[in-house]
Amino acid sequence: MTTLESVVSTYALLLALLTPPTTGGAPATAKPSDQSPNRQCTCPQARLQHGWCDACSVGFVATFPVDAAELYEAIHPHGHDVQPDQMRCATCRAAVPVDGWCAECNSGFVNRQAYFSKLTYLLAKGSVREPAASPCAACRGYSQRSGWCAACAVGWVGNVRFEKRDAYDEAARSLEVFFAACAASPRCVLCAQAMIMDAYCPMCRVTYRDGKPVSPTSPAPPKQDPH
Image (tube, rainbow, N blue to C red; front, side, top):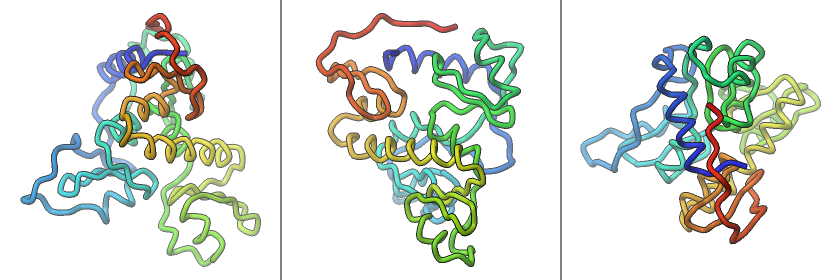
C-alpha cells in the first residue's frame, strides 16, 4: 500500500517523462481554475469528452460530474504519450506494449499512452460513444450509469462502450469507487484522492483499497519510491 505523497511523487515523475497529450481522442483540457464569469461554459463538450469546464468549475468523467478540482486532477482523465526507454520502472516499461497496469506506480498504459488512475486506464480500453444515438433502449438506459447489454453484447460505463466483458466488469467496479470518492470529497478531498489511488490519507490517517478503508486510524506506512 502506498502513501498519497509517494503516489503523487511518482505521478509527477512520470509526467516529466511524457510528451504533451496527442490531439487524437478526447482533447486535453486546461488545468482546472477558479470559476470565472468571463469564461464561456463548455459543460456540453466537457461532459462528452472527460473534460473540465472553467466557467462552472466542474469536470466530467464518462459524463459524470466531479466538483472538486483536486479530485479531477487525481483522476486525470486523459492519456499522455510515453517514452518507455526513459522510464526507471521496469514494470512500467514492460506494461507499455501490452496495455498493462503497474500497481506499484499506480499507472496504466493503453495504445502507448499513460493513465494515472485505474478508472481512466480502464475507460481507455473502451470507446467514447454518444449513447443517445444507439438504437437499443437497453443500451441507452445502461449508459446512465453502467450495465451490460446481453442483446448487443456490449457494456456501458457512462458514455464509454466496451465490447469485452472482462474490461467492462473492471471498469464498472472502478466506477463505483469513483462515485464513493466523489461523495467523500466534500468531507476530505485527500481521502477522495486516496480512494482513487489506493493510497493513504495523511489527514484522516486512513488507508484505502478499492474505495474502502482498510486500516482506519493507522500510522502512515513507510514511503516508497518505485523508481
